[in-house]
Length: 266
Image 1 (tube, one colour):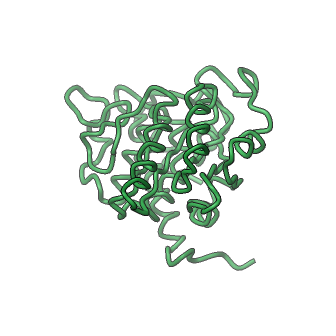
Image 2 (cartoon, one colour; image 1 turned 180 degrees about the vertical axis):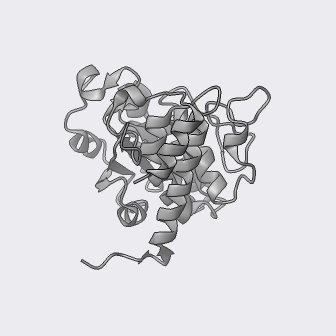
Image 3 (tube, helix red, strand yellow; image 1 turned 90 degrees about the vertical axis):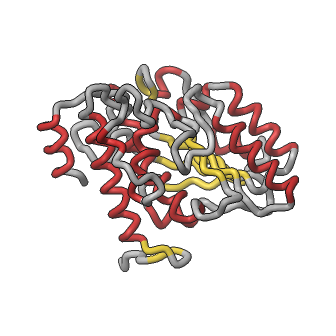
């Protein structure tokens, strides 16, 4: 099968390489004295790379990471795009550093500080509503987690999004199947997720959250209503030693191990 080289004029191999470089940065942040939320950062990074490739140059569009514990992925994505010039791994988590454990809105490219799960979804929906009221075509794009859907605020926002017909609101769910204490299906199963969003009036798209061409094609608004993208991902994607393991939610690793992981990135 012939490999897709470009989607809507965006060069796929270049984005795949950016994602690889971002994964190296995430691993480096896991090797700092504070460590980082590596599992969810590695699962979400392809989604962030795709979202910024398509929409970060539009000043009327906001890209919000609601699963704020994956800040390492956000900083890595912003760095490989040159939006944040400083290497986040050099001071991540250090006292006085702007590279805090949750997204810091004092850094360029981060419209809102997030961290309390569920809160980033209404931030992005509110942005989308503001753009509609201004007569702008700007989007509100939010990336959350599947464990985060246990927060009621996510569904309250879904209700508002359909009530106000926010057809410029895109909600991407990083469905990696894990959360802080284990597997989502063992803690609070989320059954019939597609049907749930459809019941709230969303246009639903299910994709492979690590296939860049699928990501680029999916992150688009729909005139029929708000969009929910269910992105199937793997926690710890790229590092075979921790792929799919919920215990890799947050880690601190030695530099020698970080070097091995970076060399072995799949």
